[in-house]
Image 1 (tube, rainbow, N blue to C red):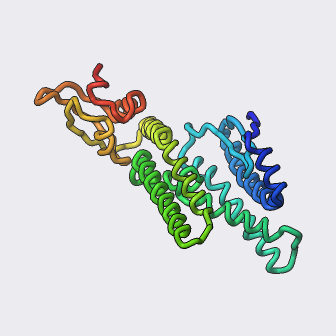
Image 2: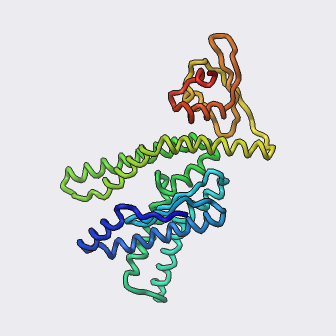
Length: 281
């Protein structure tokens, strides 16, 4: 594992120290480190390769290769971070309520862990909740459709936050925190949408291959399409609980039968603008 330090780490610390916000920043930094430590420990338990750990102004960012994980393994890895923060908040609150233990910054640490825990459980990219949401929804709709729905929900919520900010500014309420969060979610979801969808397609193929290796029965379905049809349009008909064969026609002439893996590989290779004829070349 390669440790990295974000370029903004030192400038933000100096800025916070100069304006008197260093204490709050350190509290949230510790809470986020606890969050990512939980991810790291569960990932190591499942022998997941950790590519790097980056120290950022507001905590840590861990990059891992989760492409070969089972759904339940991925679920527990991404749930471990927010769940640890929430459990720690409950423990701290209990100790305080029964007057067992208390110290300076106690309330701030409790609040920081509670915020980070519940924030990361929300189903918005790039939060942990987006992965948890996709895993649960993919049981019904498959990885590709659930990923698309997750991005739609994220962008609608981001726009909602931006609208609230604009509305509040119009009435001289100068609180731009919602707008900052909304802009962050909108930029991140737009920037990563294509890459995440491609990874979802690859993950869908891996899952299907595992099913076949286990000799499990999967219901199949056939689709007839024209040689000039877009791969994106064909894929929109896929359901996570079916295996698809696609019969390709040129007018009324039968050309070839391809599988859903061919379609997904075609999108990965040629993009969403790819056509069926590209697969025949």
